[in-house]
Length: 210
Image (cartoon, rainbow, N blue to C red; front, side, top):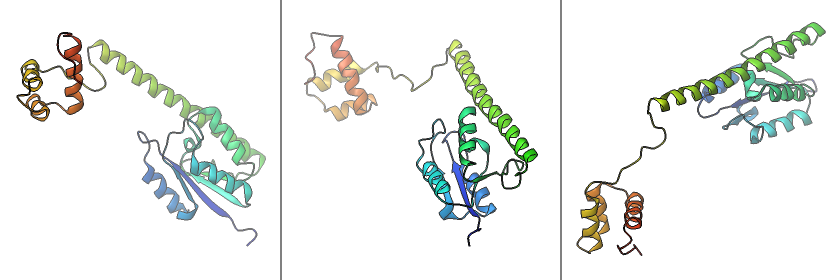
């Protein structure tokens, strides 16, 4: 039918902070079919997202479309970008934000409703950006405090084993295989040869490993 409303849903997850299944469940419960559900599994720091761009093309090229998202930050992770995407999409489709019922352009067509929606959008997108900024700041402060207390980050450094020289000499003199030497030192192949290079570079009289 000409006036039939087409519902589309969009869900995005950044692997560290978002729950994809929760978004999908909310969209499906609202009535979004699987063929009209678009999903991206990457950060919202930019809009180079495959499903998102495809969805926008469909919304723009057809009529009577409604985009449903669970929360406003699914449009992006930046105040200006959220505003930009909202304004662009609402030029050719309606948007419904499940977490904020007032952000429903299918209902708020009158001037006052549009004003309220725009105001709420600006406040929420600003709050979302500030929250992410505060999280990054708290993480940086926590790391700085931990470093000041002597905590080290990243992979732990493996010190050269105390019996390395003995095992090295046995291996270098052909009295045992490299595999046996690694097992005796409890070292992986890459770490073992890294220690060999370090040991030989500090002892120039030792024949280099070919």
